[in-house]
Length: 430
Ligand code: HAM
Image (cartoon, rainbow, N blue to C red):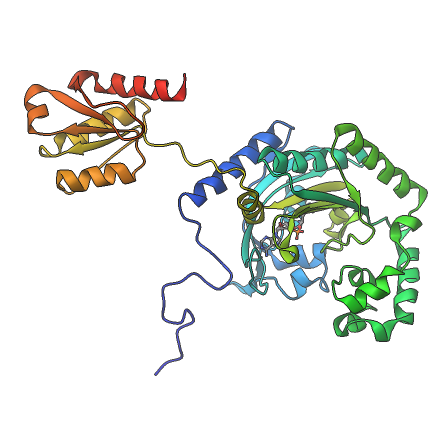
């Protein structure tokens, strides 16, 4: 006997991935469409880039010791022996595309893309998730950070979300961060034995990650640790103040978070994250981002500032469900054609309705009247258009409302499209 099949013999999606079926998939698309409208209206252009890259893009851009690269990236050699990676995040890919095509700066790009991380699957943490994001390259101005944050905040609020908090912080830059890291390391090393097992080991490679540890033993040590925001150089402090002032001016409420450490090492200066109070704390980040003024250089280009964010679409929809907002469904069908007189009317009338821009469906396989009416009802259509032998003889169609009140009426076959259009206009209030 061969080895057990990897899918356990069942037809199922790989661990940590999910299918999104109708009508949830409709909300998924609708939210992405709203995002597209918002960012296009702010001067961002869509970037479509491959779902996989040479692994070196992420190794160089994100860093080998980073969890997303070191532990979670789907990396493989292709049939030519090239080392590739399924994209674990969007920013390094955008920077790679910038370096390849050199669009004029400032370059404002947006994306909607699946991302892949081999995480321990749990609620709202998947091995394939989707992000809606923007990246603006070539602008050092703090007002660009404000623009990015405002866009993310507007998108979430536009969906109706209200129970979330925006956390902002600063990672400093090459002038102030090294000195702060020494101070932090000194503090943590003096308490090494009190830290959790994982961070006792990792303290020397990346002391800032300890600030992000949620375990109580680490929390106790980091509560008294020096804070980067108290050690920013004048330029970084001025930048942070301008961001705070900008958010204040635009009415975007933000909380300063002294511990905000984002998962990537490329950040400089501003970082931010949106935390939902409506979903489970461990996975409550709806999105996050920040400035990464050194990333273009890390990938081999000239020093070029950048700032952006990624919003987790699955998380956002979970939060919407928890808050009972963005409950829109797909628009209903205008009509469902029920033909118990041979099927020609179903074929021709459905086509005529669709040609006129109406949403229409029909039954197939010559089913009984009862079965077809059941399908019509289940389709959510506003009207059933019924054609039986009597209608065929008199060249009429029976128009029966399926929702709300109003009785059925007989309409001349040649006027049925106009009648459905009228019904729709009446229901839409147009
Ligand atoms: P990130 O914080 O790793 O940032 O991801 C952004 C958002 O994607 C998270 O806040 C979360 O909503 C969602 N997300 C991440 N991992 C998962 C997962 N396994 N399952 C479900 N949702 C997930 C970035 O990726 C940066 N590239 C963002 C950025 C853009 N920074 C600057 N520009």
